[in-house]
Image (cartoon, rainbow, N blue to C red; front, side, top):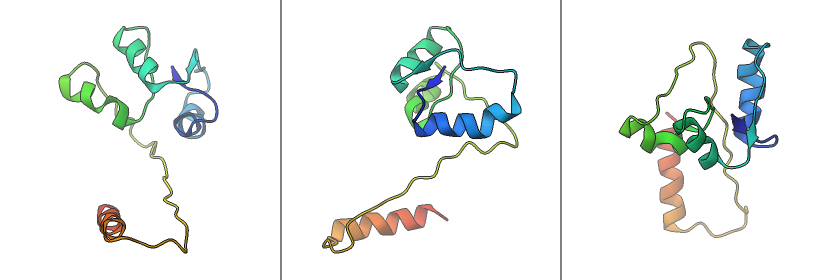
Length: 103
């Protein structure tokens, strides 16, 4: 079970994972990550979701993550803002923190 066409998670799955599994097919595409998470918890199949979505279940041991060696499934996120907009101290602090996290 994966997200619907057009979602960033689905794009990563289609471009980077399924090329290594040509015989695999998408059985069900679902719009809500929560629905996929619940179906996997109900043992209906396995799914591919953002770690952010399943973090509480991983910590509680309700779900397990499978590490796929040699395949990069990371997504790229872009931050955008209006270039003429005033940058508040909170904005500056946030940007500083983001830049530290990239290291």
